[in-house]
Image 1 (cartoon, rainbow, N blue to C red):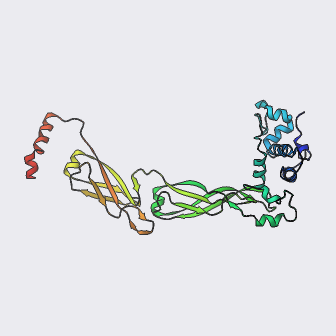
Image 2: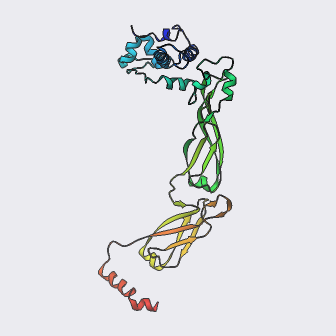
Image 3: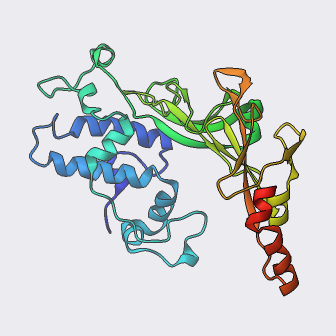
Length: 322
């Protein structure tokens, strides 16, 4: 026949989800090993936790209602698992204290419901609960990837989160969405942290966690950012490297810079264009620099005539007279 989870929770098969939660709450407090002197209190407490774990989950409950404990734990053919029924074998994790903690919330929910001698708190419950020092959950950190243009201009971002919120009864909770809005300041660097205090999951015995977004910069097709400077790579020919040229760079705000290069472009050469980089976060009217690096492309082959001409042009005598 298997276990009768409804009988264990002392409810009938027509019980609603609220009835199931109410029954588990009452019986778990009553039969918790710390509040009961009965020799089999731990066994009873574990049975209550397993029954609640099954009946509070719609998929497991659907399978149990149709196939009993044997079908729930032994698994059923996938073709029979319609309407969201559990189609693989169920195994209770066996940690009744964890089930109790998840239901009541907090790291030590038992302390909220019993006095020092283990007796259940009734009228004194609310006052004891208010006196207990609550601990805040650790911060929830998420990366927020932004385009370089967003960090150049600044922008407003809206992010939807889903979190657990306590219902008006103070004992149950539900999942609700919330929109978090914040302004990205021009010049913010990668790693900047935006904190929304206490916007994490709510519980009866915890302080909600802070939600922290960490700025991450997306790859940009033209620029590499280092602090407040922007690096641009220009590909040039050997001819240009030796004879001079102009390089055009489109800025983040759409301007086209025409930058003359009159020096010989050697392997370590860079061109610095002042105040054409990122705005400074603490002083947006100021800018970092634009630093242009060069990749010189050499010809793959030269004819004998061209080699001779290059030798003549690059001879030490000509260099000395230039």
